Image (cartoon, rainbow, N blue to C red; front, top):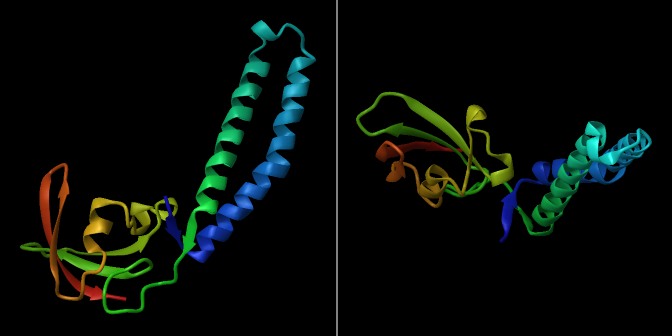
Length: 152
């Protein structure tokens, strides 16, 4: 499946992958070697911990390789509709609070920073909408209805 992301996130993940492949793999291998030197592997907590760390590092490497291989770099949306990279200000219909979100790829999502994945119910509902459009999406609390006030 294709994963859309910004150029910045693509570069950040590429750097993380390179660091894992070189530095982190070597550190874990050294920890494994040290733990092996301690003797009986069946009762060696350091060895078990190092093996688990090695497994986690290899799993993350595999995930990053998969993400980067299927990544599609997108630039901020400059059209009049909501797209990847768009910053959207919305208001709940019948409410007063305004919320601003930026539509990003799954790896960049961070609701605390107002970054919403285009895969999320809110992000998916916003895609291709225009200023002044009303839209709704499902949440655990039921269907929410909003209006788009501004798109940057």
